[in-house]
Image 1: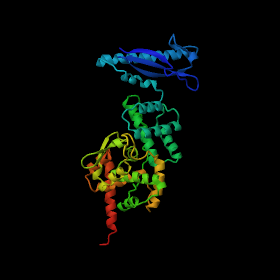
Image 2: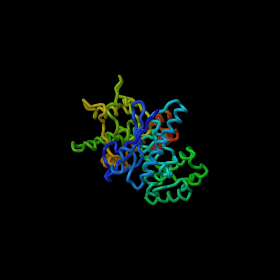
Image 3: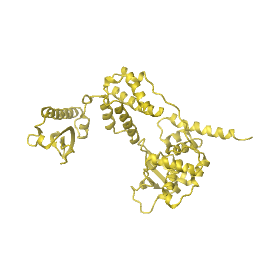
Image 4: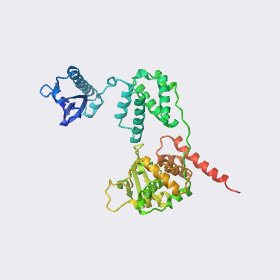
Length: 387
């Protein structure tokens, strides 16, 4: 059985306001796990002998809350033992009940923070959406989730000059967690405000480079002091050749490049999807991705050493603007353009389900966009032919 005890200031470090955290220690099979009570007091307000809060205006309430949390853990552990015959310390993390959450805002944050399945990029989008929601209204109760509130939130987002599709994305994240609350039986599905409200979305034109424009980038030359321009150019081209997202290109490490008897094979876990991607680089663009890897694959590199550089997306896009001007490309280059270019040109060369797999799309409809783009480029080119 798990033994519980109360620990104060385990790390022997006070916060700026002179307080430290009270934790619950769970001990089982010579292993311990610590759980925050979210209660902070000063050393003078804690009795080491009695293991409780003293001389604090809320001493009784704090001690009762600590006891309640321990009782809840003990009850949960007993329930699991009856149900499955055993319990682990990790399972105790699930003892937080939704009734402890006083608002939908807290529910959103709790679900997002404790999710083990969210990809890094997805969680980043959800954090941004949550920040806007808190900026709109710091605390939103479940009872506040009405059509009028969603309409007001939509106007709030628009007032911040956000693009229509960005606003749509924020609504998408909010709607996601309303649906999660419905599945958890803590919100009535009939009261879902998105039954009445449909956020707007507009189709955006995907910028794609022609083969000639890719060549123009390839043929750029740089001085010694412009090594950063050359590196970003090569990162962009590597994405054009492989279809990798910017986040994945900048995170490619030496250990992700393996070599078989034919050449380099890229093995990487995509940050957005969390799925492994295996790409034989020697089969892409006539060995061009291999040439770029060889350029930056230095002798003696450790497995964890990056092949490229972890530039910020904003800086990367600013430099791409400079590169476009140098290469006489009259299109707005961003990190997304490289992936769009790869997908569009490959769409006419491989079966659509193969392209879907390479791009790691969850829906075939998303991949079909590139097939339509590829067909449009071919049709536009034929329109210019004088027969």
